[in-house]
Image (tube, rainbow, N blue to C red; front, top):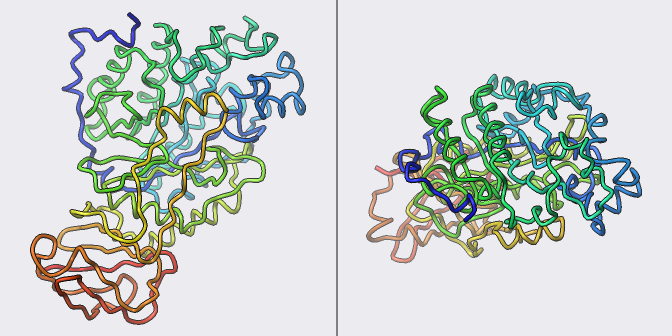
Length: 486
């Protein structure tokens, strides 16, 4: 029996169950940043540190051609090039504020064993190498100074087997480099679920890194990437207990996790690049990226999703009781692509005008209506395993909405109806609010449009609630009807 199957009798998870805190439910929109030594080559994606060691993959071929043999130039040799000379935590925090997010942070450690904080547990960190700065600490202070909640994301469970190479001469097998890459392990340990699971030493260090960040920076939310299921349950239990009960923190902290890596109820489920088709009874989060390429970090020739895509995604997610945590990758020097900044600011401008229908809202009985069909979607285990084989993830179909798609949110005695565009006709017909019982049982006091006419004409019949729009609608992206009930 391996350690992942052992559950001591004293390990009772139920007392660790936590509901989503109100701040999280009100915030709706967050941001985080993939930034590390992999930002130096900026080639294909943030898995460069792994894929450069796998002969035949595009990143391996690129690396050997540009930097030389893996025995001569390994991942550790990117550290001196990762100087972050233009890293400005105040600018990063201001960018978050301008984008309209309410919480956020940085990938505190990716799968590459490079901690972005001043760590005593791990000497391979941003204070000792590369920028020679406590990146997490500086950013945490800047984020909180803007009145935002601070998030720490952890991906380091992937380190088990991450650097194991198909090239036996690679520097990862030199015992002198164990400090950078970890112990030499069988090659199969780089699979999503290997036969040889992490040993106690690995699991203990995995936990101690997180605890060090908890003690130093008191994150409001800890996000775990997938593959935390390879970590011994004992260490995950001790960590959750420490975060929630033993570290002297506030009662409004929360964990997010993927797949079934933590027991249900211990935190908030996160579905990567995912959506639900209907309103969920529980708060949830999807993490997704601004990057239009198959990457979570800055890469050469970057491309970004337009602001309208992010706005529509946010409205869809929020209408179903979810939050959107959006990633953007900075360049190696700590700056951002102009296009990325422009799109984020455009999202923020929309939220400045229409955020009343997003922040602090709760879902309606139904999420909305329209012609676009949204299926349940998640970056599941099959796709993760495919990524470990191919080195890149498959792009799931992005959702394109129309002006005939409506999304509902509520706040007090107000129902917000978000039109995902500008209707071609001057009327909006809402079948879910037709005359009758249930959803249509409340008496309407008034209907207006945010940023537009405050008293629209409307009528109800057995087929729908029909609202006559007046004048030019204020947004090219999404417009909001405000229905106030008596």
